[in-house]
Structures are given as structure tokens and as C-alpha cells.
Length: 118
Image (cartoon, rainbow, N blue to C red):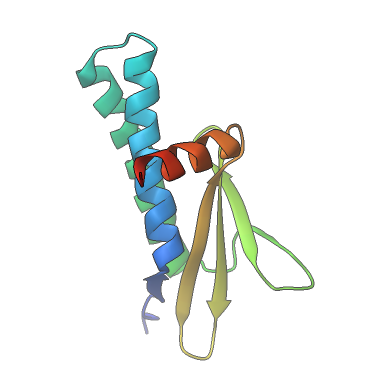
């Protein structure tokens, strides 16, 4: 008997972080004098890796490193530059993706987010 996959839930914070990182990948590559096609290709590579992780989590939700006190799990992705954090609810068969952060430039990302709001 095949076990149904877990349901993924993406928090608003995760969606905002994800969109911000995609924008940052495109902007930073263009700022570094790469052409737009290259910048978009890099952002799509990132998106594919995140989508792959989400798909894997629906099948194997207990992967990653668990923080003992909070139960939050995490895993570095995209050459280890970004970290995704999630929690697993086995009773409801849900995986909730909490956040995704840039381990290399978190302050720059926050600055760009504040700047774009003005």
C-alpha cells in the first residue's frame, strides 16, 4: 500500500523570503554585469532546487538537521548559501516551510527589502 505524501504549507514569510531571494539573484547578477538571460537562468536554478526540496519534503519530511528545543528542521541548499527551515506535523501529515534565508548576505537582503518599500 502506497503511503500518501505529506501536504506542504508555505508560510507568508517563506513566500516573501523566496521572492526576495529570486529578485536579489537577478539584480545582483545584472549589477555584476551579467546579461539578463544569465541572471534569469541563475534564479531559475535556485527555484528548481527549492521546488525539488519541497517535493522531497512531502515524501521524506524528517530529513534535514533538527533543532532539539524547537523541533524546527533545516537544510542548506543552493551550494549551501541558503538555509530552509521547516516543521513537521506527523498527525496531520503536513510539512510547514517557515523561512528561507541567505547565509551570505542577510543584511543586504533586508536593506533591499526596506528600500523597495519606499
